[in-house]
Length: 260
Image (cartoon, rainbow, N blue to C red; front, side):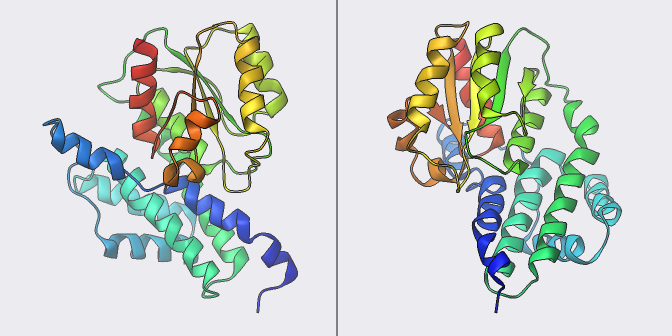
């Protein structure tokens, strides 16, 4: 049986795994084929890889986890693909183990911390993309009011920096500071991460207030998180311009919005 403390943190575990996984490339895979775009992800890790990596971060150190990723890169796997097709499903699997009482809460929390360590460890390499551009596109990234988790937003930030965007904010930016930043600096887009425990009731008014104070009166607002993966129509109802299923799709959506 779970303790009262563990029950209290059940939404946290669910949100962490929902944030980092969010239905990875569900819409993008079909759209790429329809548009005749070549799949640039290279070889995809197998389910066996996912289970092996999840077991590794549960039982060994973050150094061992980073070594596992480095070995897969040496085998020819793309780091971007490993972020989306290995780290994310592994995080989801860890959350499922805890929900099914197959794994201890502390162990899962520490394992997810090791996943975050891997993202930080490979951040310099990941950002050295040959496709990266240096222009004046600027995005402000922040959690929604009441949002407590950061892993999904952390990965999104990596993808934007890699694509040449100037990124301000990220995990840990207080919601009260977001409107101030938008009012004092020019941004093409504001990206907001809303996890499973975020209260959507006040999000629409918060977005409206952000727009009213923004230095760029035509600023685009993009929402991300598990709410919008299963119900993308919520984004427009809350006053946002777009949503995305994963970090790579978030960059594509922001490119489209900025081009307008």
